Amino acid sequence: LGFEQIFKNALTGLLLGGGKGGSDFNPRGKSDNEIMSFCQSFMLELSRHIGASTDVPAGDIGVGTREIGYLFGMYRRMTKSFKGVLTGKGISWGGSYLRPEATGYGVVYFAEEMLKNIDDNIDGKIVAVSGFGNVSWGVVKKVNELGGKVITLSGPDGFIHDPDGVTGEKVDYMLKLRLSGNDVVKDYADHFKVKFYPGKRPWIIPCDIAFPCATQNELDLDDAKALVKNKVKLLVEGANLPVTLDGMEFLENADIFYGPAKACNAGGVACSCFEMAQNANFMNWPEEEVDQRLHQVMKHIHDQCYETSCEFNKKGNYVFGANVAGFRRVADAMLDQGVS
Image 1 (cartoon, rainbow, N blue to C red):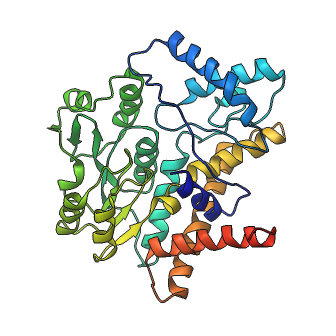
Image 2 (tube, rainbow, N blue to C red):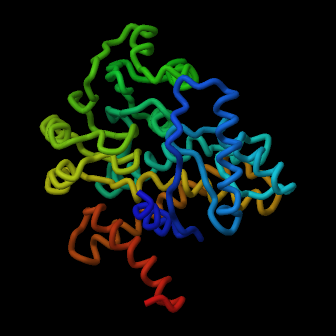
């Protein structure tokens, strides 16, 4: 995943390297004090490996604004300084507008650019989404804004099918699901009286666009075949590496547009870079400016991938385009700086 992150960051065109890290601490069932204690202990060791111009950690699965706050607070106490050494901070203490939504927004912006190539758009499209975390939440909000209809959400316990669409108070309810700590999506089905499929994944439901936004390897070969059988037009990865290798091979050879995670979900890291820039200048950009900059970055990534695929006579193969475009930027930088 760290290797994948290098090429994702390269595609943004921003001055970012890439890496991944974490811990094996499971926050489920832990109290706030236990989580805070772990974060503070973790930062005691982590602090000497990170810095605003070295490595800048951000949130991911199991790490949200609360955990970033505990980590950042400990770093400040240890260093007696305010630096943009972590991203995903609260807006009132150094965070950026749209950071929680950025990955999901970026995924949808990438999908919209893919559709523009075939003179289409998201308006009126039926959309299947997995997960109910930050990425899924951002996808749902932006799809609604662009006129599409999200009809599924999922969790470890199964998925819900809401034919009327996840809109209005239902979007707000996604936040309640996350904050509950129960990690189940059945509560949504019970609350809004929609169908729940225990132990199943949402890819059996016919849709125009599929956004896997839950976790790694969540969509396998059988899921890919079900989507293609139901005539899905686009599959755009919101989670990191959500499709298994055999599923990926099948989708690349199917008659659909397939957007890989290293290109599509780079919106989160782009917004992290925006947060670092704002911290360095001791300022906050308005939400509209962050959204506009995010859209520009995602369009840039899309255009790189598409143009590279055309350059090698693989028009519309976004997996190939993303791999080659990302690799070339990294390789060129290494060679220019004397690495051979």
